[in-house]
Image (cartoon, rainbow, N blue to C red):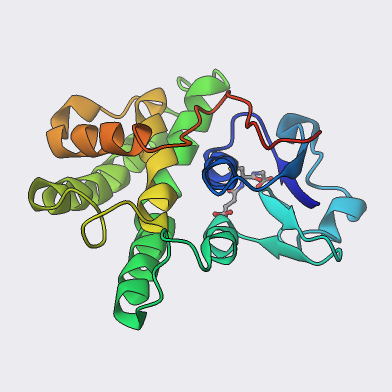
Length: 206
Ligand SMILES: N[C@@H](CCC(=O)N[C@@H](CS)C(=O)NCC(=O)O)C(=O)O
């Protein structure tokens, strides 16, 4: 059975759990505690050369690291990742945008807030906000004219961007500024098989 190494609060891991649920794939969940340094052990390094979650371990023991790579692997052959090379290039383009333009600012501002470090890190948070808003503005502009990131329906690109954009308010990003993003977040939430960050998948075996 597939094994997913994740953590409770991780948006990158949440992406994978939503997809596994939507694809109805059974998996074992191994939830690590990041604050205890459980990703920094020699044993975990053998699973992920970057020492972080999420990690998907296949039945034969091989692992896939990086949330975008895991999403692409799992979605292969499903309607969430169409076969057409141009469509796939658009999906991968959004995944790069997520990693390059949103992935540092939103998660870090959120971590500082939820770990009670907001006062101490206020200058860093200000810079993270400035950076994150640039990405969110680009996303909102696209969604003003498009219901979905690629084509006419939900794809793995929407799933790659959804978790951290939906969690940005926890890092005190002012999300009322982005009406089209908010409509899109609701569209993603209404997809069959969607799971909240603390919901348990029906396909979660352990
Ligand atoms: N680019 C990676 C980022 C993964 C990542 O930042 N993981 C965080 C949790 S969401 C983590 O493991 N942090 C602990 C650490 O880096 O020590 C991905 O998309 O999977």
